[in-house]
Amino acid sequence: MSASFHIPAINHSTHTATDSRRRFFTPGMLVVTAIAAVGVGAWLFRMLFGLGAATNLTNAYPWGIWIGIDVATGVALAAGGFTTAFLAHILHRERYHPLVRPALLTAMLGYTFVALGVATDLGRFWAMWHVMLPPFWQPNSVLFEVAICVMCYLSVLYIEFLPAACERFIGRVNLPGRLAVLNHPVDRALRIADKTLGRFMTIFIMAGIMLSCMHQSSLGTLMVITYGKLDALWHTPALPLLFLLSAFAVGYPMVIFESIIAHRSFGLPGERSLLAELGRFIPFTLGLYLSVKVADLALRGQLPRLLVGDYYTQMLTIEVCFGVLIPILIFSNRHLREQTRWQFIGAALVVLGVAFNRLNVFLFAYSPLERGATYRPSAIEIAVTLGAIALTVVIYRAIALILPVIEQLDEHHTPHSRHDQRFPVVAPLSSHPISHPRPVTPTVPAAESNTVVGVKE
Image 1 (spheres, rainbow, N blue to C red):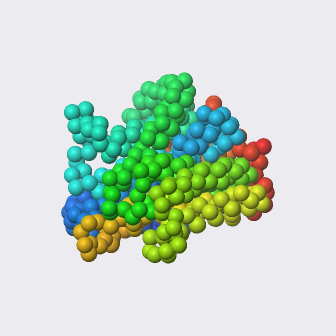
Image 2: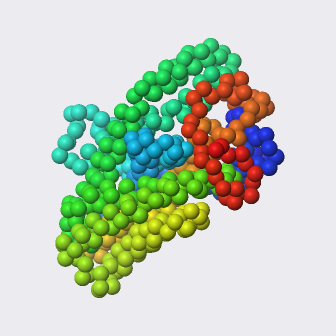
Image 3: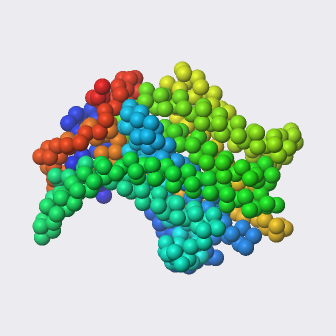
């Protein structure tokens, strides 16, 4: 079976372009897809046979990696969506617009799988819709606030991303056979949506920033009630603030991390100079988070514990040194900040550091009152988590190939009738030029890639 599955209307006029830009199933994607398939199978097993058969969760440990990684970590790492939108749209830093859509796509997929992660971890997942009905609301519950904010913000993310679909399909709807009668109504609906969203998008962006800040902090509030179970190095009334500040801190590193991986995956030169500019903000956001964390430890008399060297202090030291201090040094150095390798290393350390922080709070530093209780994730739990991550990558690549998300990739889209015939829902690009071009990308140094690719000024 050939691994050359073509995406609609995506071809390249130059033979120097790599095959990875034209194909969906590259060798790496075959591996990722296989992991995603195993994860889907494990997820179906859990849904059919229940939590008891699929997990090692107990009354002492009612949550595991599905909450620690899939939900708590997933929500934090999706912060790039609202932080980048704030920078580009609210502060009007127009040069960062090429980073907005990839960040929104990452956030949109991240929150989608966060919602699926919550459903997977619930014993009675079929009753999730109750939270949308006012008679079931409990305004005194932090978990209720998290649920409402996540649902609302996920809706906002899909609305914010809708213009990309409008830009791609307006004037190009080409449904086959009897469905052709819907071409005009669908195209008209897309035009109305595009025109309407253009007037109200600022409101949705502001709502998204507010909603994201609310539930990022509320996730920390959930663990405030675990007094006596969560170690004192992490258990603090300042947890909501620390969770919010760590989300701010990981927002831009996650954008850098995602951008470098996506551009390398598609064989594109990358946005090195633009990412270097974005990296200037990281020492400040990380520094603010570190200052509050150290001040909190000092006010609670926990700083002397760092000299003890026990298990918990070692975990905190790893979290802070590798996830905060080293990235601050990397992004504070202009020479290192302008190199793609160090951009990736610094961003990856922040991403892993925030993930480690969430695991410390929800798992590693959490000790139930039941003596001798232990938790080790089952094979099904691990497969579902890895499968969710892999499936996110698969969907990201598919959307990036179909919709105008990555600007440099979109520059190489050229009409090719043979490819469009495989996907009759989309007409060739040449017959309907894009009427609303997005902001251009700054010049990328030629040394970033061996491939000769035209880049806009």
